Figure 1 (cartoon, rainbow, N blue to C red):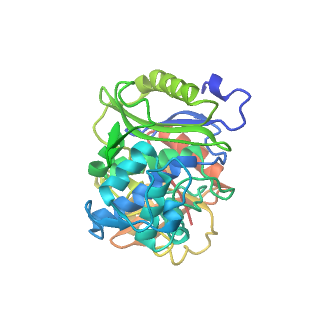
Figure 2 (cartoon, helix red, strand yellow):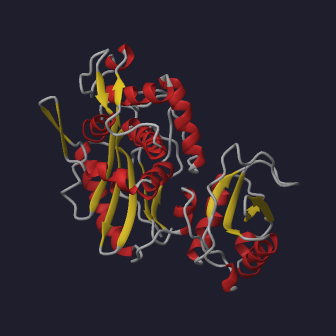
Figure 3 (tube, rainbow, N blue to C red):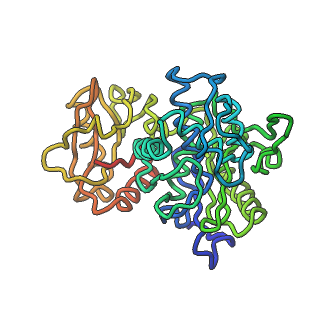
Length: 379
């Protein structure tokens, strides 16, 4: 039974989750799928998109980014950038990580996409590609917007994807201070350096959201990502996060790798399917589908959530994996439709027919408890 934190009592803005990213098990969850305001956690996605462009070579760390009047006019917190000047990509990254600079966030958005609204659209598409289907972005900073929403679970996915997809760039989230034009800014993330094993990643606050925090911890061979949304004060949020780490990190699995669903989320390999046949295990999983890759749904399958248990080298292998899973876990998968979907050199093995996303998530969680890798996706 999951414990209800004191932080969450009589606090309608609270939500929290702790994920063991080695086993794929959720160790703690409280209102993790309720929509909340991300505040400056938004900047995690701003940086995710920037890291994508760095990886593609479209920008470099020393690329100068031009500051517009719109960017310069952002409200604090900010670096005090002036219209017409430039800031390097690396300085902008550090400005977001430490100062949570709203002006630097808009500079990144405008230089990468031409406008902040266009960049926000790309942020939302990227979020949905990662499985963050309850998240919508309208700006790059996290400043108040009633349509800019997320969930604790979605922020957990993003906090994990950043470190798995961009391990080199993720190290910026450890930055504890940053000096720019003679002024030193200290990180708002007070748990880095305070709690053993914390290696990032981001804080956030607006009045509507309360105090938010996404934290990654690596200690003793265990790895977790934890999210606290809606803290009443920064201190209480931090203390609550420290308490969650203390309680749940010892319950995480010791191991070097990542869970199959973690790797699938960012299109990495390998993934192990639910089958006793060794010929079907440890095959590469293609990137998670985007709108462009799912042009057509399998016949008879309506749009909505599905769960994926693997990507196999042939239709026969995928069908066998689905049959084996239904045979071994019939109570969990009763009434669901097994679906195979060819993709490039693989065939995805999925189950469809869920009433809503929560039903799919519940089924996935039960399968994970039975050591079956599982990923929730949307058709």
